[in-house]
Length: 103
Image (cartoon, rainbow, N blue to C red; front, side, top):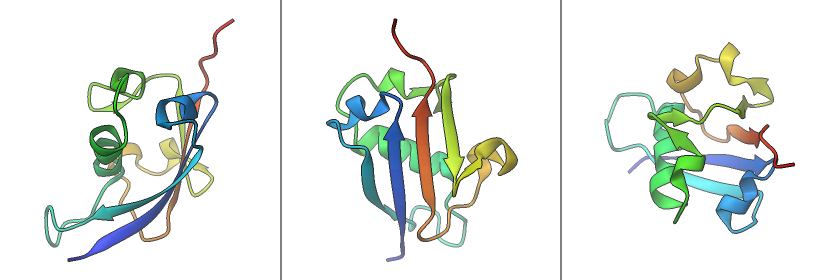
């Protein structure tokens, strides 16, 4: 069985959805589609299905992250990295930052 080790960080209030923990080490199995790359969308679904217990709609909307959440892949805006189609690599660092704040 093959797996990827991904460092995931949540900030801007998103950590509240994850037991107030900002940094997580995610071990993502890759046997789902052998021979096919594991994409950022697979990680997002994994986080939604395995790390969240409630308020999943505050993270995912229509199979992608909600509007108002910045996504950085190794310190680069995901819009420059194929967004959901980005092919994850071992030891990638993915950061989710909420830009929506209450007032």
